[in-house]
Length: 111
Ligand SMILES: [Zn+2]
Image 1 (cartoon, protein in one colour):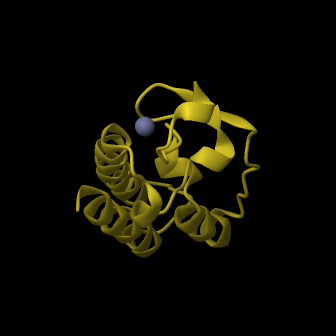
Image 2 (cartoon, protein in one colour):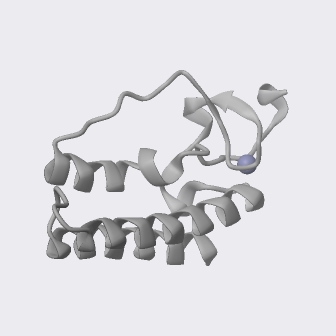
């Protein structure tokens, strides 16, 4: 299965796991995630983490690119509503910065 699969996929949770986003989240929220050994991909396979990439330029699986595009747009909206919520842990400015990062990634996955 995985050995004969030449494609690079995205982690199903790409929008949370992506390194670029993780950097933003780490500096914003102080969160750092560990990379798992095997992940479920955006197209529903189980592959070694090494066969996935959070970088749009590296992902060759079309279904995963579409998944990542949708996920990043969804997360951008979510982060923005978080920033607007009363008593939120992040300011609207921080939320806008993170949302812009998600939208940029979404654009790159759709190309
Ligand atoms: Zn895939």
